[in-house]
Image 1 (tube, protein in one colour):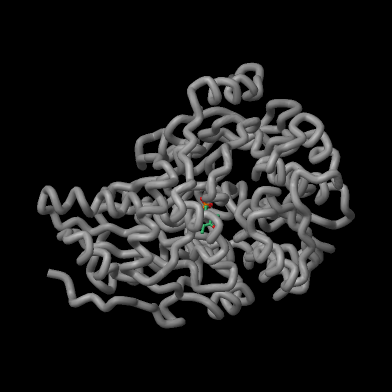
Image 2 (tube, rainbow, N blue to C red):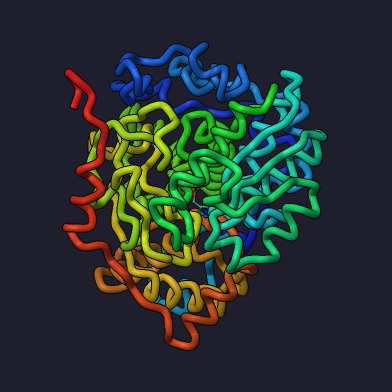
Length: 459
Ligand SMILES: *Cc1c(COP(=O)(O)O)cnc(C)c1O
């Protein structure tokens, strides 16, 4: 029998992790290397220096160092809003009348409203330490742009954010927060870059995508002296920083003498999921435990469940290195789905490899079902969840309902990545029943797959 569990468990400052955990150190088979799109040859760490600052390029390529010290300056800023609470969803359990025990790790307790601040702080810190003049980035739903603006303001670094046009128009207050922290915001695609002008010429009415915004941000970084580009998800370095979520969760669960049977996270580029599962995936890789792990993605942008495991560009404008990942094709522009943070064509190469090798599962869900779960959760747990996070809520509820049928008392842990205060347009459309579920057809996907890069000798 486990101990009586409080509603919210916070670690003390002393219990917070002092190191990040690098999942690659325990993977028997590594994700395939990044390739130079021109030569088809694997990239070396130095090849990344024009795009990323040196320490982050090192973290990107380092598959050996198991634990990486978190610099004190980063831990100082973490202490402002961490540890994040591990919450037992007693009211949700009661409402579902399920024997399952449901826990969630809540990352929405900071102004950015999501887990993204965990990596933004690290990336701004290393850029400052290298003496860079400034940073550029993209933002989809706006959480990453906000998080990075907070971090850059703290470390006193200029920042330009290319914001996906659809979100820019739908979420004017997101833009206002980013500007409050002193960053510049440009709607993407824009005519301030070559890549943006090209995308606009081909597709004038487009509301943009993360892939387009990445092309613009990379271009701006490489054409501005001593600027670098930073990315809020997908990359190995981001998964490393986000491991703080899973490490904290595991310390708290261990204190409660609990071990999850099922771990669930929403998956856009894979960073929150990769971070949450990190120490549990370690157990799985080392054969110590065998929790079921689920990535939940929107049916409108199903990279794991319907994508190809192939080398592809990380952006629409084809300016980035090639990564082998589950992808819908870098030319895939998803239909307007309100979970802006999940509208990315690819998936973290680390998670792609683990999924390909059978260490985790994936499922997809339509957005009306996601919002139904979101509202149900809000009414019972009093937190208004982000639409992205609500994909994980939906799956947790499904699993808890199965437990009710079978009588099994499974322990479920899911990541509640953020709050939905800037997503009220989406909530309003759900409540007015004007929200639709667009699922791409096989023909839509084939069109985008046809544009996957051809690499002699590889694919
Ligand atoms: C960005 C975001 C996500 C998705 O990104 P991942 O890198 O897949 O974690 C999920 N939830 C929220 C609240 C976000 O802001």
